[in-house]
Length: 102
Image (cartoon, rainbow, N blue to C red; front, side, top):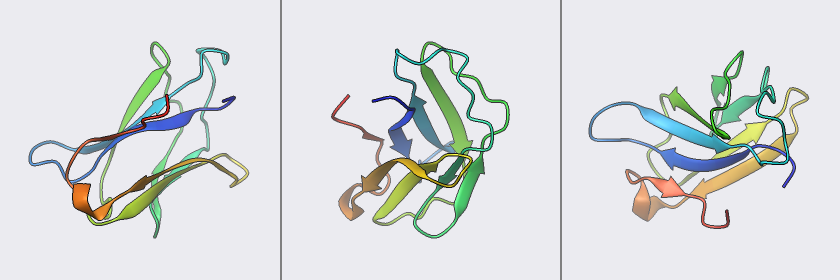
């Protein structure tokens, strides 16, 4: 793993904002920049990174408008290449979903 990955997705919470957590592999420097990286769901861009910084190799960003049914979250680099993705199942649409292979 040589790039950031999508670690957790929390869509459609009962209170508060939807959010996505990224994990930065410890082999990458803590000051790794995500400038112009983007998060997408299956239908549109949901977040554009500018100057966000990782803390202890994690970064949480608030998003809005995630599809609240089965969906996929994609992380794309500045060139538009898919760096990582996480699928969400329809049976867990309002639950925290974590990556199980970390």
